[in-house]
Image (tube, rainbow, N blue to C red):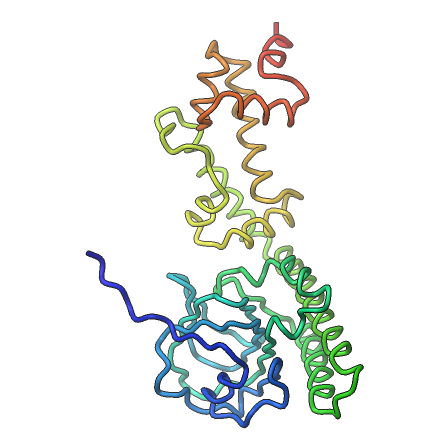
Length: 304
């Protein structure tokens, strides 16, 4: 029987996080900006793995440490950011020296009555693996740091009925800028993206090999696992490179192979569907017609 590791330590509140970092109590129970230079040793009851039940955005600089999601590791570099959604497991290792930077943490209840509670799910980087962090340029770091300073200014001001609206507006601005910067990162790391595309096509070719038909249809999750990236990161990277998300890319490759088999072999439509990993020929027929506006038989007849 496989031995289970220690359970992650669950941090439910912003106040608890402050206590763990040996910081004074937060000025607001549902949001805080943490200066990492002011944090102290983590409380002794914390295990190697923690779960935050709130959103957090971290920028760490000049620190020699490793973080992990599952089996994925990430070395912080200067000006690197990670984004953690509620419920994700984060594994930590000891710092060689005190970190610098900041953390923005906010509970879902803080944004509950605002559109952000729904739109925050559109920022896929909250589901990226930690090794897929955002690496900022000097200019980008200045921009996000200024936004944090704006949030901190409101956070420390006398609270009135404008305070929450203004803080949430700044959070939305921060997330939109980070979305832009991730798009830039996909483009500037185009060589890495092209290498990933090549690996994707190699893996998808395995699925259309008749000898491996028992593998079934390729899924985004399985494909991402083979590539050691998160499903959202894979889709966002492909969208920046090809204009299609991961599911659309998979379907396109399946249709390309289907066209080849229909036009160059005498295999029946059902045999082709089975070879491509479809459990039911009707599902293959529906996808093929949706993508080509022709049924598989109509496509074959067009070559006669």
